[in-house]
Length: 83
Ligand code: SF4
Image (cartoon, rainbow, N blue to C red):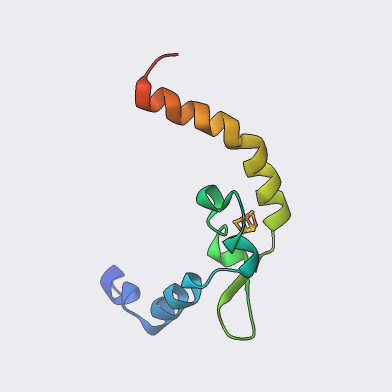
């Protein structure tokens, strides 16, 4: 199959559709702007067929809470320069 055929295949369409629905827990998560629910392949499919909670949620949360201030500093340096 060509890349274009893969992108338009039923499997890929299904993957994209199920990826759109986030887990309830993510909606109120204060690091969602960084994590965005994590990688789709690590999210269980719920009964409804939508992608549910990430199996690494606790680890992702702890990582982003730890990294958040450092990431903010990197962003600041990229925007305004300096070392
Ligand atoms: S840390 Fe957990 S709850 Fe927060 S966005 Fe990531 S997967 Fe969702």
